[in-house]
Length: 111
Ligand SMILES: [Zn+2]
Image 1 (tube, rainbow, N blue to C red):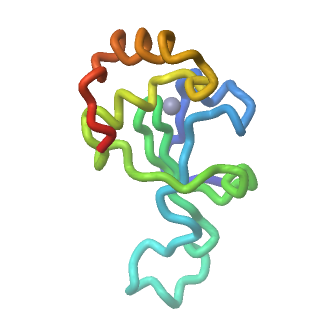
Image 2: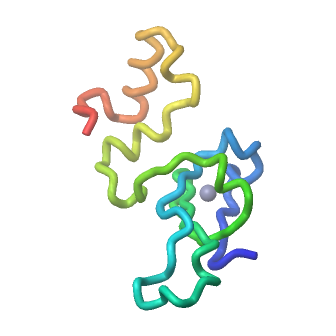
Image 3: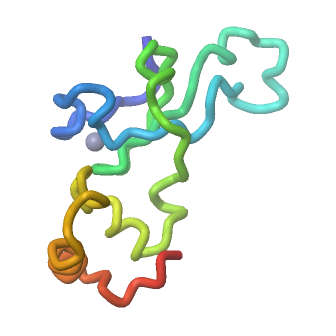
């Protein structure tokens, strides 16, 4: 069961822990006015940071996803930085520099 259309981009084909999916709101209700409708409290809002899709689900994989910010609330630099490879932190500085150059975030201040 899910609400809205879940991500169908290549991220959805990867193992859950490698997906660039984050939880925007964990087990939240639709609104304060729905407090008595417990059916919504099982759902969490999930976003794919690759394609920006947001959907609500109560699937078990939510438990293994990190909390994250809405992609559209991030700065341009932060959005670009999401495109760095998963092993970015382990790469030599020269490769990190080349990646940031290709993403256009060499001057990004990290905010
Ligand atoms: Zn996606």
